[in-house]
Image 1: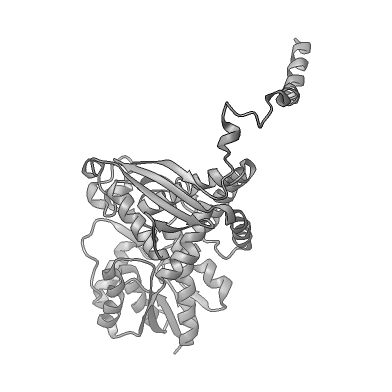
Image 2: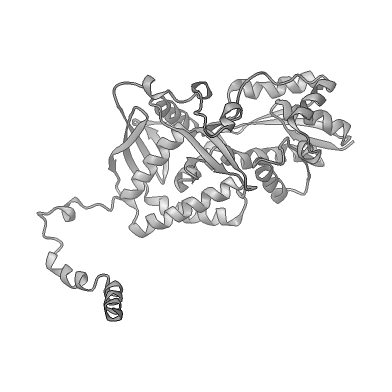
Length: 394
């Protein structure tokens, strides 16, 4: 009997997949869960459910440090924001797929399975990585059998699979953020209820006094918060805690999915918002005007590649090389003031600063003002010629 490794969360979709893979595909199922910063109960649940459903062989892979160092930090350097929010779910998917492939190769499996439907983004994100890094078959039982949610629940009852709890929302959580979907949130006219949020306080419950946070960067990545050097995971967790306390990081958007449909998405990304804002502030001090313009193009392109599941596209590697070269000078300290759901940069310093207080000063004569006359005279030359042509036509 061929083996298949199932990316397993222990929820309804993947629990149904276990039995479908056995009954419909005649395969020996091995389950695997990748820890990228989910709550502890979400890491413990898959192992428990796999045991309860039939004592299946299960793998739990701790990938938090790799996620922070090799995925989150590059995203900070790229200011990876898609349609207004820092990517979180999309950023973790290529790493999860990579780890599932490693388990499949270790187990000698012939296929990898996932519980994605045919309507979401994750089918693209998982399969793009799997197919570009291995020759293993990919099985998606829910999509392949065109099952509805009701049909899944009926099949679960017939197989003795416990039905999901009565929780209102579908939530995907990792170190970098929480994605919240479902229930009343499917109506874009309804304000997200307060019980949908866990990481961020409502504005009226945030501290009355503002807090100034000092973030130190080296080569474009954060290395210390309030002068305390921290490991990558600790940096992200601390940033989430600080920003969330002040109500920073709630995002409510109409998102354009890969397949074209619009979807109402609610996110909590407090640490991501804080760190990317601080990073941008430091870039303004250390990069040239043309570099900053190009960085905006890189940011949007990078974010689209990640969102669309194209982490292994060579363009992403090309962009990383350009980004890393530019980020060599993005070193220094940024101060950010947080208060009542808002944040603003109040100070920047860097040994690579391109700012010269001496030259900017109105009292300085290093830059001879008279030398500007010729430059100003010929400035906007083509526009001036255009206006002369227009006057002739009239």
